[in-house]
Length: 138
Image (tube, rainbow, N blue to C red):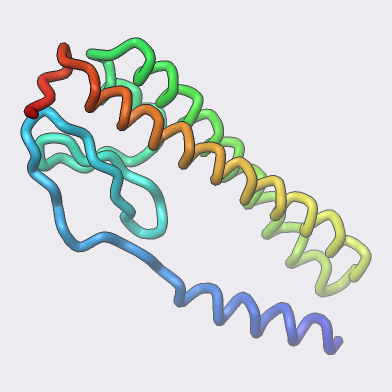
């Protein structure tokens, strides 16, 4: 029972950790990384596009940037899926404690996928901004 109380306390503490950027960059032709509600977003022309299925279209003017953003979106999808499973396993662990190990594995996997997504997204933004066809302003 003590483990369940500790888990609930950790969940309450983590739920208040929302991170977002407040500034919306409006740099012409350039893509910039931001955070909204704890999720990575791409700012381009004052428009924020969350990392997901629509994100690659921001980078369509550069094939390497487009490919990197497709990989980033795939990593982000896998991260979200792993975190959903981890959350479910952690809740079940309140009743069946050994399931906590399964939740920990999925949490670690979700965090790793999220880091890969962020790295690929940064690569996509840099490749986009280096591409003259994308309207970069120097």
